[in-house]
Amino acid sequence: MDKPTQENKFQEIKWIENITKVMDSSFRFPVLGFKFGLDPILGLIPGIGDFITLCISGLLVISSVKYKISGKLAIMMLGNIFLDFLIGSIPFIGDLFDFAFKANTRNYKLLKGHLEKGKYQGSGKTILLIVVFAFLALLVFCIFISWQIIKFIGNLFE
Image 1 (tube, helix red, strand yellow):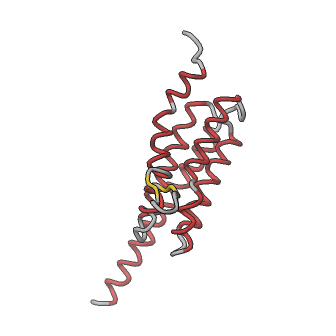
Image 2 (cartoon, rainbow, N blue to C red):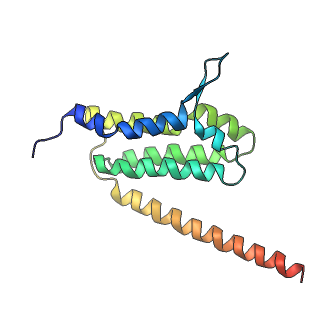
Image 3 (cartoon, rainbow, N blue to C red):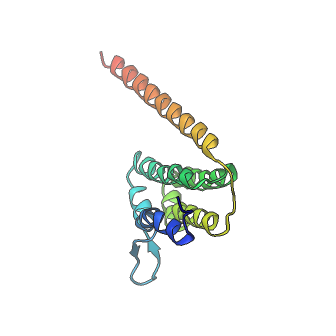
């Protein structure tokens, strides 16, 4: 089997680039020329908008494992996502931050640099698996706590 060329690698990640553009730069403010995507728009949905964008960004990072990203690169990419989610969750300030930070674009550039220059060689699978399991555990915990709160409130009205 032939070793994939650099051009083939960029064709393989074209779908990541397309999703990145949709999330970070598919629209333009007419007067300012400032680009933005669905990320800040979805972030305006209270409670779930930032979670949806976190999941999309996370899936892009998880799919980057296919390109043999290192643990260091995985941590850098996850850091971008975490910062975007953390600050993006703050009402009003986070919405403004989402218009400017563009975590997906930053992560795409990191992945592209990895493919172009061979930077960050290694395997980031272990780190990503730990983060995915921690995320799922946190999600289950949040659902459990929410259920307990709903039950508690329901008992108040009995």
